[in-house]
View 1 (cartoon, rainbow, N blue to C red):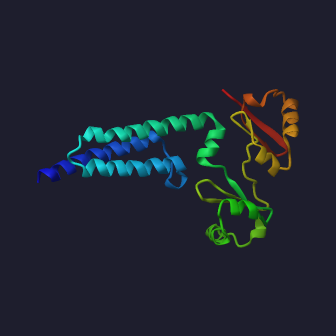
View 2: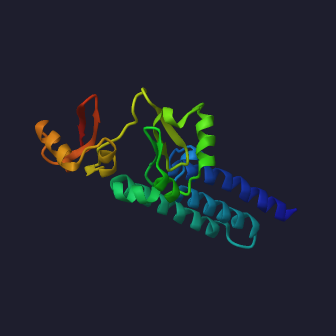
View 3: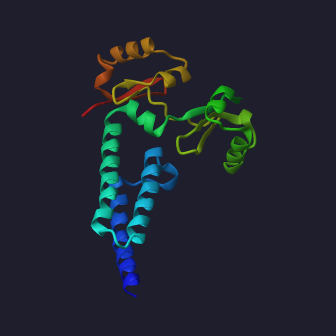
Length: 210
C-alpha cells in the first residue's frame, strides 16, 4: 500500500512537472517537432518512467536529468534562433519535390521520399495531376506544401537574418549579383543588416534588423 502511495505521488508531481517543462520548451504542434524536440521528448519520457519505477532512488535526484534536458533544449533553441546555419542543421530545410509539373528525382532520392508517399499526400490535398503543380515542397515536418499553377507562389525569402538564401535565388532564376544590385538600387548597402527580404510583384520587400 505504501509503494502505491509513493508511485501515485510521484506520478502526480511528474504530470505537472512535464507540463511545465513542455511549456518552457515552446509551443509547437506535434507535426512540427524538430529532431531535437523529438529526441528530448523521448528522453523525458524515459527519465520520467525511471523516476516512477525506481522507488528507492531519491525523487529529486531523478528530476535532475529532466532539468538538464530542459536547459540543453532551451540553449540549443536560442542558438538556432540567432544562427540560420545552425537552424538549418537542426530543423532541416524544405526540399523542392515538384517544379512546374516536373518531379525532382534527385531531391526525392536524397530525402528517401518515394512516389507512393508523394501521390498519397497529393491525394490528401485533392491534387489530381502533377502537371497542375507549380511548386511542391517537402517540409522538415514531413508535410507536403503544394502550390498549383496560377495560384499565389510560395514565400521564398532571399535574405533571412542577414544570410542570402542561394537556393531560393536559384528557384527564381536569379543570382547574388542581381540581388546585391537590386538592394543597392533600393538604398541597402549591406545584406547583413537585413532581417528579411523577399521578391514579390517584381519588387523587393525588405525589413531591417531591429
